[in-house]
Image (cartoon, rainbow, N blue to C red; front, side):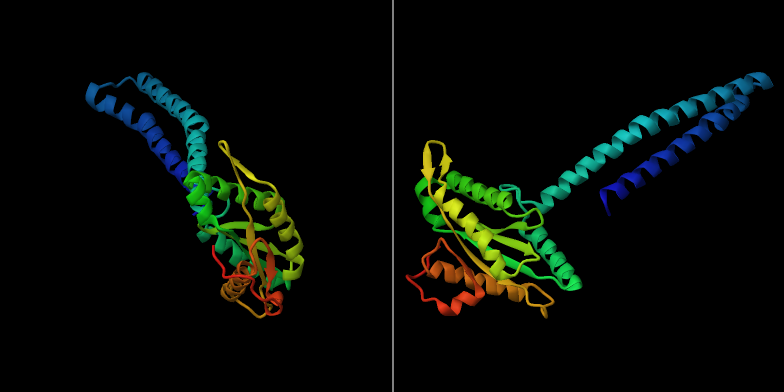
Length: 261
């Protein structure tokens, strides 16, 4: 249920409570006064009933225009904040794995429905363990944040950046085949490798390796494409890191050294 529906249901319940309160003030109190106090003066009872009605109307206006609106707004903000926490990675602000995979499947459905291309890329920070061991885990967090921000700011608004796990990111590029994806991803890779990251009084140099694969037209799920992108990423690591490799390049390349994270 959406936050708007929750707020509307709550508002409806509050209005029911107000209606019951209005009936109580308008009808029950005069009847109670007649039975308990023995009032028989019709004019007095009428005045009490009118005042009960006025109080009911005033109560309705106050609750509807202030308390209900305020409750709806606060509830919506709380639910939106909770949904954001469930969908986005706390450290980097990009999609977390669960929400990101859901968005990827939405993009796959859209691509199949409209006959469009869709590419994905696995990006991994090179030798991240060495960064943690040399500079500390807080510095490692800073590097992950900086890489995520670079990916997010330099890709298109329609592209998705997902923290897939640890220092690894999944990138989703709609309307792009794997060869078209290489150029913008390689541009990001170069900028990251040329721009050191400052943390406290330290300068940290880092690079990323990226593997790219397109979702094939006949594929109804993303699992195989993820596997191909992961293989291309492994190939990029094998060929010396700090590079972008797409699936068609893998058979043409020979590894330079054993791959390490």
